[in-house]
Image (cartoon, rainbow, N blue to C red; front, side):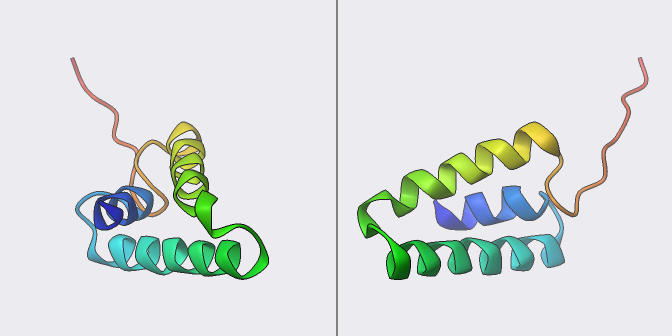
Length: 69
């Protein structure tokens, strides 16, 4: 499940985006475990996912595409 979250954060269909998302998720989990309570690390990761998707729906490296009707 974390691989999917990493791909969504980086940008679906982009290998560099998935790698960036994986590093980002890993760093966040390590920092939360080191400085706080490790029981909430999954919740924090999903909150960050929601915030990123609200700000940039295509992911961090994804391009926003306009749909022609």
